[in-house]
Length: 114
Length: 113
Image (cartoon, rainbow over all chains, first blue to last red; front, side):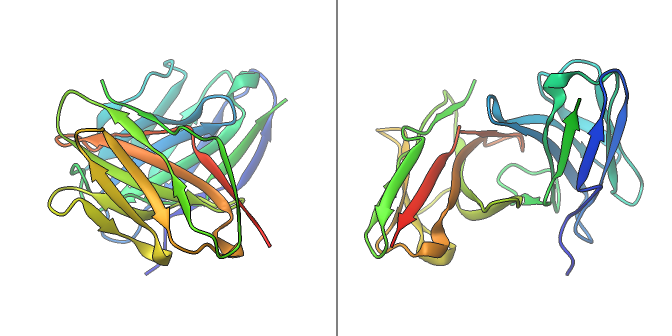
């Protein structure tokens, strides 16, 4: 079974631009979560989607948004990029959005904001 | 609210030596506990998880962890490490009724030959 895929793997943007990252979960998985990883703040939860509905949201500004499609693929969008948004963005999928469910992570998208 | 503390940011050990990576959590409710590993330029991979039952949990690659409720700890151990174990290790916690995971700050394990 193919793992979680994320595209693109690397992105370079400038301040003020917006960016869209994509995540394709493992086949049959219906839950997708997004995390931001930075050297200073570590791994922080962004949001979780299940059956096209956002179930949980972390403490990020409204510039960060996401959605999930009927095939469980998910996208996250960051508008008006700031230098501090430079990070590795990780997507994880699980069968359902249940506590204790194993989350399988993709390789991440490394975003650099100049 | 839950939180996770990984007491060591870096742990250097010699190859074939035992290792313990420490993790403490705080929560006022029942939790699930996880250890993930991240190899350079890769995503995270689940090593093991504790949901309930036996407090000694065995995972992949020869790792195990022990859940200690009274000390609110979930330390990760391996009796003999290999160069290929060089990676960053993250302890994580989730509420037993929610899937959101809170990660610790990570411990970088470096293996010396």
